[in-house]
Structure formats: structure tokens, C-alpha cells
Image 1 (tube, helix red, strand yellow):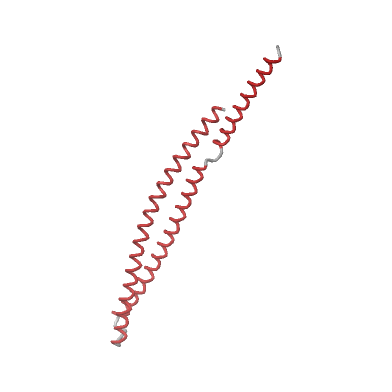
Image 2: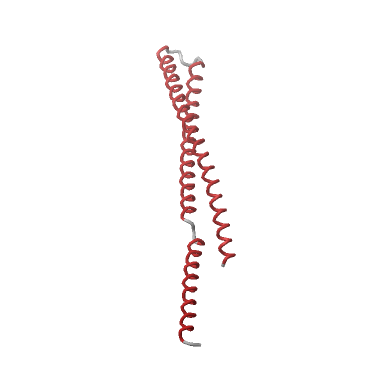
Length: 150
């Protein structure tokens, strides 16, 4: 063989090697963790944390309502038991019950607001979960196709 044909074959081999290196680099990038997938996981974690915070807040409000309800019951029991004879004391007790009932109503209104927020965040969490599962499924298919190709 003459030198020119050997050089030509060598050049063709080098071009093919470069092409294979680029393809390998692309495959390695695609096989690695997908940025979109990581972003979706991060977003889902954020929504999940927000949901946990709202549920904790709801629990605290429920406890506050229970405490207020117990105070109202005790005050009403004292009020109607006949043990308190002083009219001024009875008036103060009635005023305390009204105040407690107002506080309970305020807590119940806040509780409804938090419940609404929880429903909204749960819907968002569900949407994010479906989106993440779809992305993961797509990534697995792409991953399997790349492995088959290699």
C-alpha cells in the first residue's frame, strides 16, 4: 500500500473515533441525573414540607380550640351549678364565656383557612408527584434505550 492510502485510512479511523467519543459523551450526560428530574424532586420536597407545616399549624389550632372548649364547658358548669351566688361574679363569668366563644370562633375561622390551604397544597403535591413519576418514567426509557444502543 502506498503512504497516501494508509494516511487516508488513518484519517477515516480518527474521524470515526471522534464521532464515537462525541456520542459517548452525549450518552454519559444523558445517563447521568437529569437536571429537570432533580428540579422536579426538589419542588416536590418543597411542597411536601409546606404541607407538613400546614398540617402542624392545623393541629396546633385544633388543640387551641379544644382548650378553649374545655374552658367554656368549665365556665358554663360553674355558671349553672348554682354555686356562684354573687351577681357580679355571675356577670363576669357570662362575659368570660362570651369572650371564650369569640376566641373559639376566631380559631375555627383560622382553622377553615388552613384547611383550604392544605387542600390546595395537597392538590399541588399530587400534581407534582404525577409530573415527577412521568419524568422518571421518561428518563428510565431513555436510559434503557441508551444502554441498548451502546
